[in-house]
Length: 260
Image (cartoon, rainbow, N blue to C red; front, side):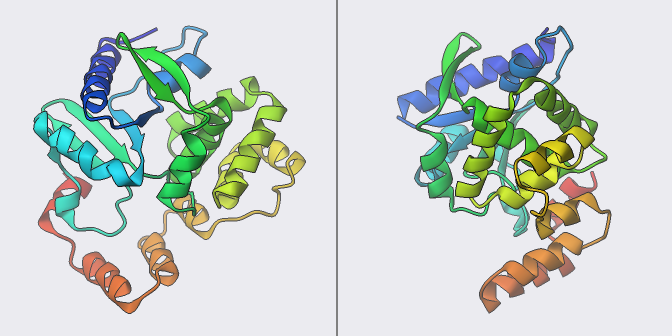
């Protein structure tokens, strides 16, 4: 079942698909209608309010140019904050999240794209065929997304609960192998263990001992804990200095976004 707003987002996805196709920009549609059709075919409404797309790292600039040309504004880059992992773009009520990787993955964006694109499937959204993640990659993403948002965000947890019920174990094994190839095993396991059936599955997959400091800290409401972890894992004094400065003196744009 689709809401009026979901239909609006689907039309936005179709608009972007046509615009990206004109510029020969390949992309993968994440979440949104893909998750709704895959895990919520029982009639339950799974709402979504923005369009999440993943592009190859060498096409991020071209994708940004397309968005800018269609009236979108970059709402995150002007914040100058080093811990914002995606580029958010807005045009009135339309929102697009432009990704070159997924949170929880340690491999380079190039490696992520090279692993996910060849196995992509096709779905029709807004009257246009778009590429989406394969089912194992979707299972991996559902677990990573749950780990990203933690115990207090019920929507990713419900996605995970349904995936654990519906997805066969062999597919989860393929997701685990993909996680290992992308240096995402720890975050994948952390996400699974948020729910009891996921913890059982993680044990069967041999992931019981896998832990991720970043994913674990996202589960705990400790102020600046993620910032300290990011600082410790960032190479080079210049990059570390940037993190310190932006944590101590965030831009006005960032503060308006963080606490509107």
